[in-house]
Length: 608
Image 1 (spheres, rainbow, N blue to C red):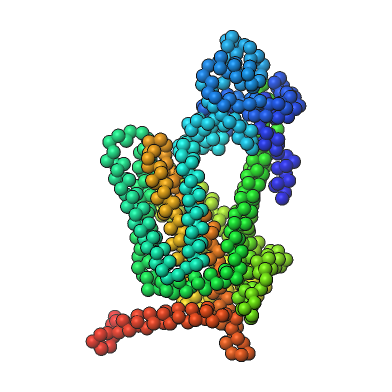
Image 2 (image 1 turned 60 degrees about the horizontal axis):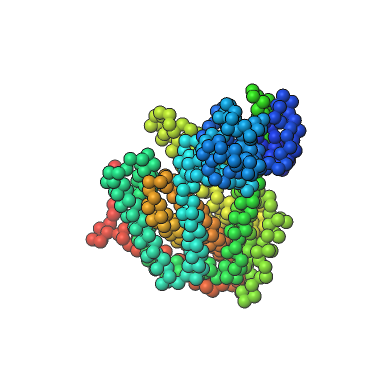
């Protein structure tokens, strides 16, 4: 809140929202003059759009754009090839694209018009709805324009160019990912044995088919003698990476599917028990949607505050009457603090979702009258969260933040030092540190989620809940872990189903235009978006599953099934756990028998 207030007071929100020219004038407003800048202090009430004179040839020099920016009344929607076209556009539209002190009647007569007017040809452009910048509409100019503004000319140029040229395809693939995620929610919600067999068959076929198509496309690329463009070579390298990663994932998942093939019926029973809990509170399926909307709102606000901090500066007059703004001292430290706020607040919002779902499941589980489920369990869980358990969520999200920050810094340093020559020992240490931080992140995420569930049950603080959870799970490690891992694996298969079929659709769409731009990187972004969407929708089943079986373990610890201490669980959950325990015990007995000697000879210890 302090950073936000400071950005409002010290920052220049008008320059950010409305845009400003190179002479200190904010577009769309009446301005005060800046001492030493003769072209400042103009009335720009009717000139609401920012126009860059060299929009197709922008460059950064000392973190400053080399092009002159002007306030204009409208952006040129048609390409202007000559100064006569620029003059005619000014006459017809009242929008002057040359420097203010040059009258439009002298555009074609002034000997200095080449330096005072935009570089020809002027590309067609449209005003961006939020920030009123004239954005070039041709793919090449758009990519240069956007990459310079984001300050990463080399790599982002090609990526944005590829996205711009295939924006309709990218949008269609994102919609496909959302549709596939909804299909997965339907499958897990109304799962049957036949439906699970069909789903696993589709996953296996998808894994094999997509991997085969990737290798076939790579083989087609290396045998195509017409490949001459750098973009096509980059597509080929990215395609090889896609194929290798896809093949490794396919092999690992096929092995796991083969190992767990005997537990298909158990998996069906598991998700039927989970779906029964969700059917009592169907609005649980909408929780990721609200969380996603809140996160989007927070991220937009965070970016707005960040950009507003970037405009907090004092005006300085440069040569030629141009005005530049110098950042205030200490702003960079606020940026780092603002980054910590991004991670912590995002984790806090996600933790609130986990706590809400856990509270609703706990309310339904610990209800003696199963025929009369509690009313509005989600609302009750939210009220309890905001009245009593805010500190628990703050502590849990803070723990995750303390791991995410070193991971972020370490990833940044690794990428910065990647091009430098490092020894094999240094690279090995980097990989070990990264793996350790990743493993610690996963362990803490699992611990905090179980702590939230224990808090919903007992009403204890975060540390006490985490300690109780570890003690309870350590007494029942095998059975509970095997059951929850089975469910988590099926949910992970669902995520892979969404990602692989989205990638397959992208391959078919982008492969027809392989010569246009680098489409492999946009396809990677689409795959990442597909995984995030699938994770967002399927995380409800994951949280419900973990909460349900932690409630079961606590129920078994505190009750014995007698009339004095009856179990809270229903008969369906009890029978499922008994069937799973029998299956695990029978496998343990088979393994023990297999260790015996078939000839009846007693095994002797090793003699040293």
